[in-house]
Length: 228
Image (cartoon, rainbow, N blue to C red):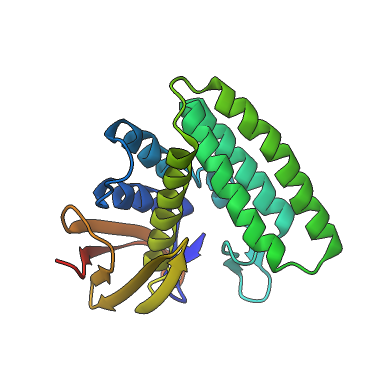
């Protein structure tokens, strides 16, 4: 669950779908063409573990509004990460591997900002189990990509995920460095300008739910490259 603004929520699955569109539209020259589809599919499924949770989301008793991804507890995150990897693995071992590595990366970010001993233990246990599963998935991949190719795939999954998240959070100005790649985003009305090269501008309709009016919500956006 992502809050576009105070009253509008966007599903993690919508965010994941947008990350796939971004991955398919980014200009990527350092990955063979046959690996671009597994990258796109990994983006598409990387948050599908949220699907069940979002059907009956946990409610904040003070606001009577659903909790978002920033406020659920560690055990829920771990359950969602594992389920996302399971769903992705059904598509293809490489897709499952990429999603597992991505969730491992997210868990490392969480671990670095966690002071609760029980949460730290749970995260470390999760990482240990996922590392074993990653080895199993790697061994099941036919025509396994090189280590450098796997790293680049992971890099672009992280970038597509992050850009989509920032858009779904409705940020107007934002900068971030991911693995030495500088990302910047600026919003002007319904146009999001990003600093990475795109094959073409993206026209996309965000769908969500208006909690105040209890109605479906949508907004058409355009994503363009500042290099165009």
